[in-house]
Amino acid sequence: MGDWDDEDESDFVAKQVKVDWDDEEDNAVPDSWDAEPPKDSVTSKPAAPAKLSLSERLKLKEEQKRKEKEEKLRREEKLRLSQPVTELQREKLAEEAELGLLKDTFGPSTVQSNDKETIDSCCPKTKEDFNHLHSLLAAKITTIQKSPHFTAFAESLIRDLVIEMEVDALRTVNTVINALINEKQKLVKSKTKKKTKGKLLVERENDYQYGVDDDALPDEYDDFM
Image 1 (tube, rainbow, N blue to C red):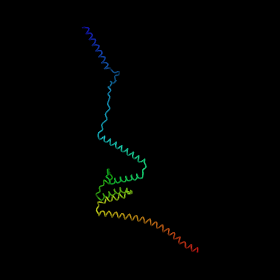
Image 2: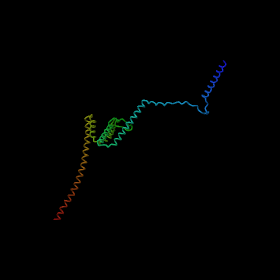
Image 3: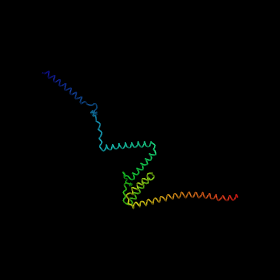
Image 4: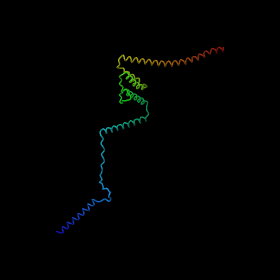
């Protein structure tokens, strides 16, 4: 009975010593007093990209379309400049420019200027307002008078302007047009007279010179006789 007690006590002491050594290893004192205890390395996951709102996605898509359109226009302009322009292409470009000018003049205006009144924004009510509109229209239309298509344009425009007018008003307009025609005819005649007068003066001077020579001939003939 005594031997079993001794063996049990020896086993208990051995186990106790082993436990103490294990605790010392776990609670080991660092070599330096100011050394920081090791930190467990924590692997941080990359943050997920923030999701764009609907308005931001639409704005980004519009910006991309705008850049693509600008790039396309840039390529077309570069190609156009690199190729020679034919006479037909020049006429087509001129017609497109005239059409664009007419649209700017009579079409709806998308951009309104606060400091300068446009034709579309002008709403005449008084005589002064109509005079102002007349100035705006005349300033626009006179810029295309040199075009070969201007005569047909003027005819159709005048027809559309007077089609709803009363007979008396049409007669007044007709009187103004006839007076303008007469003034134009007088101007043409005066230019023609100036040219004819200059030609007659030259012919008279030549005749006068020939007449002097003819008068001198009889004297010489008499002297010879």
